[in-house]
Image 1 (cartoon, rainbow, N blue to C red):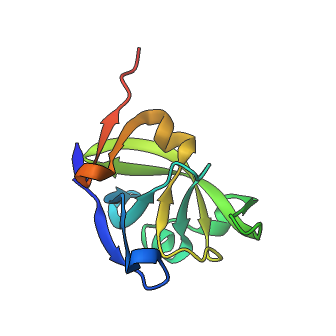
Image 2: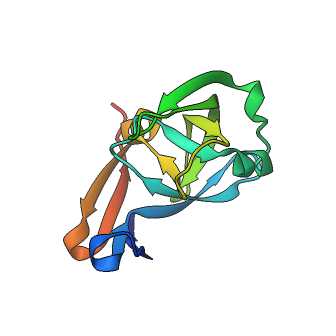
Image 3: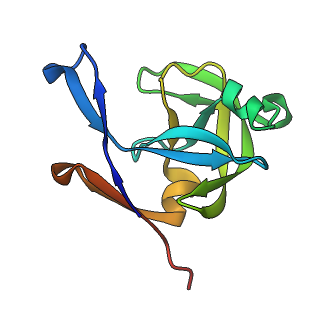
Length: 136
């Protein structure tokens, strides 16, 4: 499926704006809507804990762990196997749930997501494409 990049104004950036690959997905049994940034530089997928709770997940019931961001700060969270619907395609991937993340976006990272989908970024056309990996 093809998607359009999202235009984001940000006064801290040169040019004062950026286009980001953001998609709407659904998570959990009740298919709660969540907006996610597709981030090939992130090794893990991350969901803000308030959204995970609304979707029916109790963070502390997951496996406690820590991840480090670009600044090296360690963030505490909990891993869960979470069902997602991406372009109506159901998948289950490991997700790090945390209240300590400072980014304004939920993240779809490498582990799980990039293993199950081929993502083609075409920033020059302001579009990106997500295709499920064909199972052999």
